[in-house]
Length: 409
Image 1 (cartoon, rainbow, N blue to C red):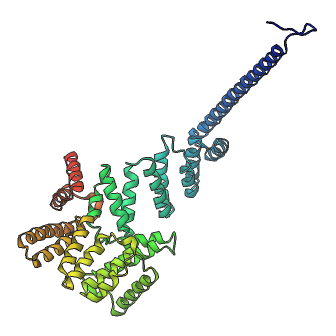
Image 2: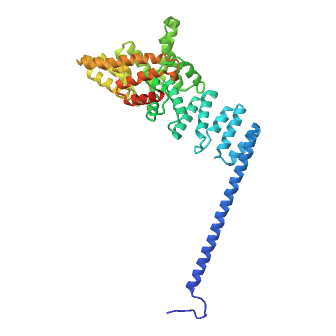
Image 3: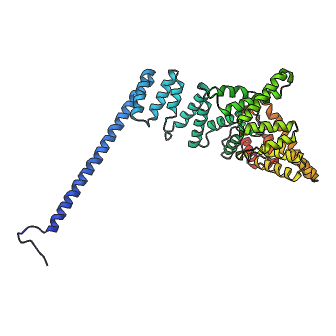
């Protein structure tokens, strides 16, 4: 049944529908205007950015570096994600001799841009060479690897830096990670083979230079002192260093050990020193001070093996050497220690096999130490390293080296 109002007006429900429709249409109109406004505003922004880029390119081609700097600064102020703006601004700063500002611009290039990796590589080199700020350079290298995991430039720089600053755990980690990704530089195998005792002729010089960027850095201070002491301890003519100078050096190292008792590099230095002196009780005292974060240091496990063997605990010695080799299968000294414990336990054939591995590793390490530049390692030495790794059951290294040698051939 239909009902209508007494005065002939439309039904109340119909009026409500008309009002709702009117509001809806008005909303649609406003929404359309908003989208149109955003479109035209965005288009205006795009056109303005392109115009600024064109002006910048004209200045860049004319090599008007003062104008390049001004226009690039204007561009990045308005559009902080402009890769072109940051790259041109970096070049302008470099032309003006301001390496620090150039590096800061290069690291601002958006990661999404295809030129970001090259910009970061250049920034890392500026920090390392021109500015002598290696820690900033290392930070940039880590950013590069985060963006591009297989980047060879960053990995080569990290491997070199960790080796020269005696950061053994970090060195082994980055080498094996690089090997697993098949992006390792050839010298990575050299540093891995030498990682049980990192000593370089230019170690003192480089750490002294790097320390200028942070004179209170524990990292550079300790690495510098150890590299110096190692070099002086292995002089062909020990008389070059007087007794007084030698005592002063030992005192300095002891002072650093008291100052940085948790530093793994200096702990390894002193344990090694006491092992060479065959001071069993001192080795035991030092091993008791090993911090939790160094619990899986294979070199310290090897020294534990030496200590237990010296105290006639053959089972503990064998376990310690085996643990050392689980963590770092390429350590010839651990194979030598394992051979000694196995021989004492009566397994002569097995001991002879372990000793043969140790001899191979010792000779290989000696030859690798003679290389003037690790980057120029000869393929024949890499082939010997692959063979040795296979003897040590380090299949990751052996397989990777076989693949690399196949490519080189």
